[in-house]
Image (tube, rainbow, N blue to C red; front, side):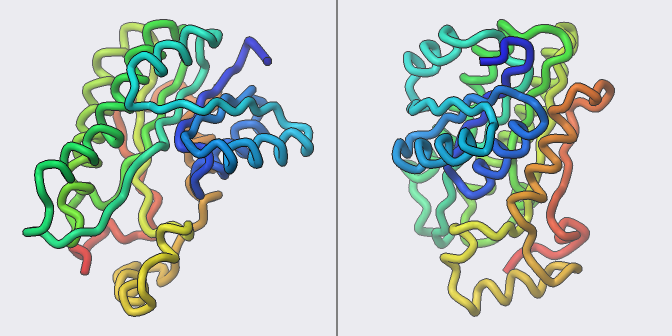
Length: 243
């Protein structure tokens, strides 16, 4: 593995994760692709390796501190970390219980924070951390626990940027809107149409749109943006509270 530019991407087997892994590998990073889905992760790594890209799959439960420690201890210092792993769940407001909140926070916030701490402790100046939040952190109906977890991740991004500035590490977040992934395609046609009607562009984005944004924030050319949230949402954040 290339020891000079190693990027770690979590949630690598997901729709956005796969695009991010591919783009960073194309950018010249040696990419460590992390997920719990062993079959999908292995297929991704095999496919990209055949394309001549450097991708190493690692099956890791990010909610396990021991597994996170073992992962980071077994790698050279990272040049880039992309916290893309996340959990989404639609549930009516009065149906969201404490366990639902705990489950959402455990992966969407705590796991990302734990990995960030462990990785940042060994990162060199110039390293980048990119957290995949969501436009929904501004507020949305039918998933209050998800909204809260992504709002917390944005807050953690800003706090991390302040804490890690003295180490020369830049930390930013990307807030995707509606992206054409299996999660979006699982919506009913009526619900999808209602969501798209709120977008100035009138259509969903692609995983590659997110990957381009990650490439911008994680690349070696970036040196003066930190603590920011980049919306990649087709303009939805310009107004509207969701449906």
